[in-house]
Length: 243
Image (cartoon, rainbow, N blue to C red; front, side, top):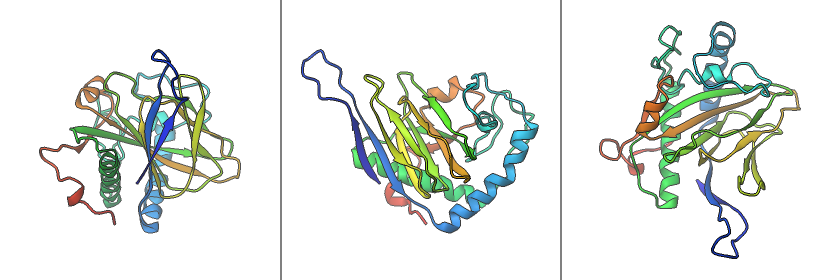
């Protein structure tokens, strides 16, 4: 896991704005894990698109040219218990590959904290899939922007001619990182981000995650969450290994 700092222009006065945020970028997982995750995602994608109405009260952007991402958010790839208003939905089937994915995300999250020398805290995770086909993209958006905003994460199952872009909201300059199989990226959840369009007739699959504090889970009851880390009850980085 490497830490890249997305930094704005150096302030020249005491009143000028300062902008500097950490972005964690690493590569993790085996080819077998990637293949099994793809199989799992495709197996449940059709029912999500065709059969489910939207439970979330968050309006879907009319700019987004794909049909299903917001529906995915009423599930949780990592632990699909029923969230408020979604008790009637058919839950994702249990699969051993999900526990491997959970360990991968948790290990890289702990590595990111260790690189920054940031303390562990009790946090929860919610995950969903973005499956983009030719000409589809993800429009600019932000995740949680309250005073308790924490981290977002994405894990790529494919390599495509697209990138994940970030925006400095102070002056609008951007940075980006290419879409590459096995790449995992962590970034502050309040940073504006988006992807450009798939243009090579391929399929772009990313797994997206919100890592949030306990109070955020209470404010978003329609989202199913799973405990990701608790320094009082769960092992730290020394007790985990990525396969």
